[in-house]
Length: 142
Image (cartoon, rainbow, N blue to C red; front, side, top):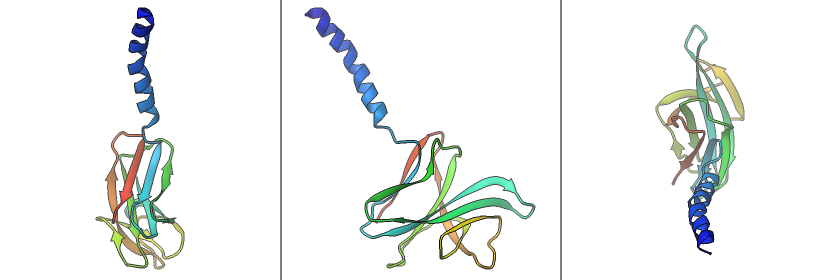
């Protein structure tokens, strides 16, 4: 019986570590709407590549997020140190903006450009530093 208690005492920390590993954030960049209203989210990524005019930024949107819901904007292990996000509440006019300009359009879009074209609008995206993590959750709060 003493040996059994000793074995259990040795295994408990291992089991606890395994449970903690299962609770880690899943791989990818997840955005969560913690507000009471639907928001629309756009994402962007600075590719680090120049087209001769400027650095190419890939922007994409709109992801409709109901209240208290989450979605993955990027799936799989995160490959960059920084990701760009922007959100808006079209009803109230509230924006979750930052300082990094990127192009959007009123309808669903994917834009690969260094400058905004005639049919594009410029929005200021927030830069999110994720470091060397494989999973990240970004919360849009009231």
